[in-house]
Image (tube, rainbow, N blue to C red; front, side, top):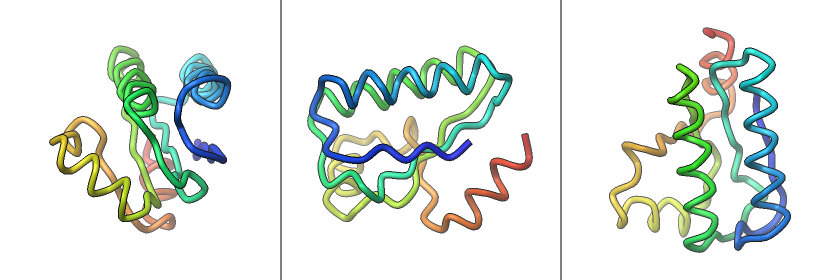
Length: 103
């Protein structure tokens, strides 16, 4: 499932909604979840925490989380924090769809 949050991940409802959507997908038996950050202009430590929490829940359920379409600022932030191993990124959505279909 490709989840597409809209707006900055700075805490509050958008973060809670994203985390809950990942949980819904896992409960539905989807063990691969991708989050498109195309419409996310920025994230702070709360947003990073939400993404890490989603990745952890996926891993605990035997699944995987993948990010796609992050802008350069977000990519640079995640890279500078050495988080790309825990929050892997794939840039082309067609490859993401193929990855999702492998589950």
